[in-house]
Amino acid sequence: DAGVIQSPRHEVTEMGQEVTLRCKPISGHDYLFWYRQTMMRGLELLIYFNNNVPIDDSGMPEDRFSAKMPNASFSTLKIQPSEPRDSAVYFCASSTRTLSTDTQYFGPGTRLTVL
Amino acid sequence: AQKITQTQPGMFVQEKEAVTLDCTYDTSDPSYGLFWYKQPSSGEMIFLIYQGSYDQQNATEGRYSLNFQKARKSANLVISASQLGDSAMYFCAMKEVSNTGKLIFGQGTTLQVKP
Image 1 (tube, rainbow over the protein chains, first blue to last red):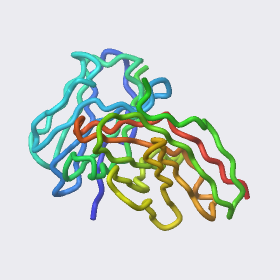
Image 2: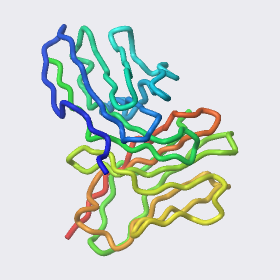
Image 3: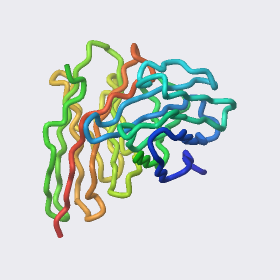
């Protein structure tokens, strides 16, 4: 079975440009999570969806960040405009439920560099 | 207050020996789950093992076992018969039923296996 798929794997852009990260969750998983990993802050949850509906976006750093899930097999995380401090690895993860017993499976991540 | 604490930034172990990676957690929720993930230098997050707060026995998955001491709020990962491919960053994480969806990560421990 295919795991979580993310694209692109690497993105280099200039400050002020729009960046769109993409994620395809594992088929049948109805929860999707977006995380950001930096050296300073470690791994932090940005937002998560259940059945395509955003449930908790309290981790989204500011209005420049937005996330959508138009259907069960696709989600995007958009940064507009991008800033150098957004440079990080962005992970998408999915799971079947969000109770304590259910494991989140991560995609390979997108390494974003904003110059 | 830190919910997940990994006190060992870096560890070394000789190939074929066992190693214990420490993790302590803080929660007042009676129902929670504890997870360990491995992040090799290639960057992906790989799920290793899960322990539920109500599980009576320590979890095991191949060479991985979780030494769960509920009263001490510790969930240490034990890797037996270390292999060179075990060299990676290891993250402990917790999910509370009352805080559904939020997987809270520790800062990680870097493990280096020496030949």
